[in-house]
Image 1: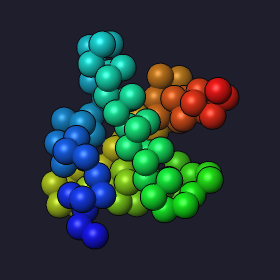
Image 2: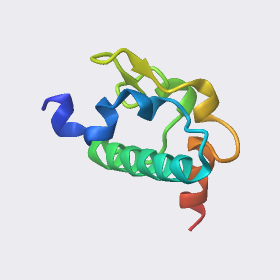
Image 3: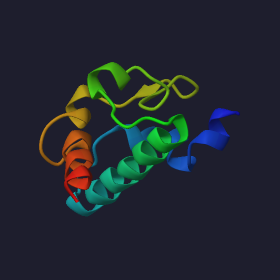
Image 4: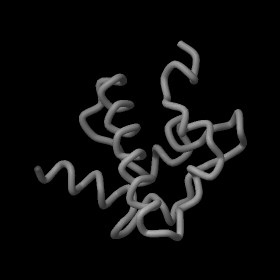
Length: 90
């Protein structure tokens, strides 16, 4: 399966890999990442994901556009790690 079939359009959109400074835009960005991550885990049959190990995976590193989600985006409150944990608590 090609990468374009596995990931939505945002995954190939370079600004998607940079945390957006506008809070409304960032909220939408993080929710999109949440959806991509959960879909990826479901597709791969994963019940957990170590973000440190996954940071270099195809999920967070798009070699076709030479973009990688920063460590800053993967950790801390209002970041990917936070929204995944928030989802898991529900």
